[in-house]
Length: 116
Image (cartoon, rainbow, N blue to C red; front, side, top):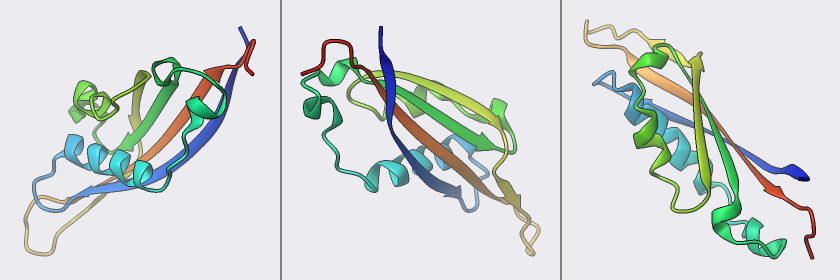
């Protein structure tokens, strides 16, 4: 198998008032996806479902992210979501819940063995 990472895209998402780490992660994924319109699988003569998609999410409370909800954004491919400590919680002056910032990296790989 000759699996090669072909694309990496970055995004950032926020939850302004609810301290919702999943929503911040989902928004980060959508932000990253908004930046590209590459038809990667078709470029190499592969089926879209053959894409191997890795989503790296960094937030202050990794256990608060619903990885299934993040993964279901993708209509194609084999999706793996990895959540680790990072991102940023920004305190609010009004005493409310902090603003949550999630950083996201999406990598797409394909098995290029026998590619046209």
